[in-house]
Length: 104
Image 1: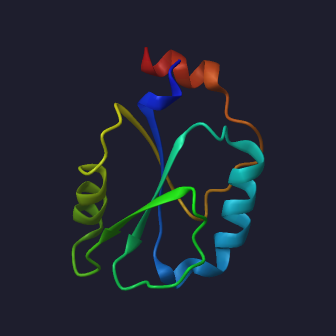
Image 2: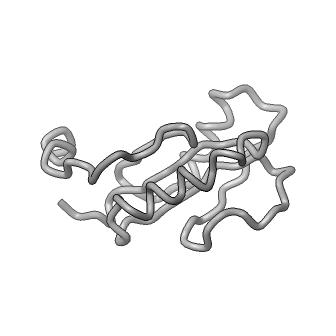
């Protein structure tokens, strides 16, 4: 599998930044560092709590959830997207063999 074909994306809102430390901690512990990482975040958030390895993609908070996600994913150039939310922590290394079986 070519990891450069996969964008690892987390959708969040600044109202939920209290769970970011555990989310980012678990991600750093279990996710391959070679993946391109993106964070979909409300455009009103100006804080600096987001790790530098995440490319920030902002959405308009006035849009519906579906339009927010779509507008962010539409900006990606990756062939595949692993999408999750900030409350979906990793508890172990992803099973890349299983993921690959779904992709190819």
